[in-house]
Amino acid sequence: MEKQRYNISVFTENTIGILNRLTIIFTRRHINIDSITASETELKDVYRYTIVLRETELQVRKVVAQLEKQVDVLKAFYHCDTDIVYQELALMKVRMDENRMTELEQIIRRHNARLLSVSPAYAVFELTGHEEAINHIVADLDTFDLLEFARSGRVAVTKPMKTLEAFINELV
Image 1: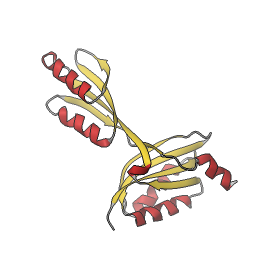
Image 2: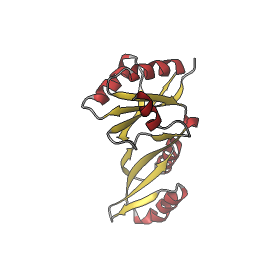
Image 3: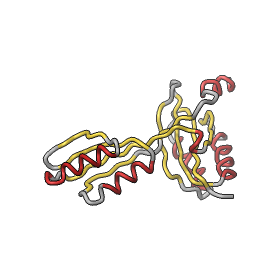
Image 4: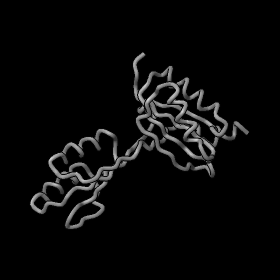
C-alpha cells in the first residue's frame, strides 16, 4: 500500500497529559507526525487535535481505532485532503533594506500576504494558505535576510458530514 497524507481529528476532554498519551500511540507504531495543532471546539470543554501524517490507510485506521480506546477521547476521525478545508499560518520577519522595499512589497502582494509590522530594522508579515503557498513565498524571499520564520500546524474542518454534537449525543 502506498503512503499518502491523512488528517486525523481527535476530539477529547481537556485533561492533563492527553497530548502525551495521544503522541505515544504514534511513537509506538513508528509513525512520524508532520504537524499537530490543538484548539477548543464549538462544544464547551471539548478540544480538537488535528494531526497530519503520511502513512498507509491501513495504519491510519489502526491508529484511529487505538486513539478512540483512550479514556478521554470522545471521537477520532481520519480524512484525506480532499475531504477537508484547511489552512496553515506563517509569520516571517525580514531585515529592512530601503533599496529593496519595492521588491519586498511586490512579493508580499503577489502572495496575498499581510504586512503586520514595519520598523526601520525589519518588517513582519503573515501568510495564511496551504503548505505549498507558504513554501513559495519562503523561496521568493531567499535573497532577503529572513530573520525569523514561524509556521503553524494545519488547522482543518471537514466538508459536510455529521456534526461532532451528533456523535456526542449518540454516546449519551
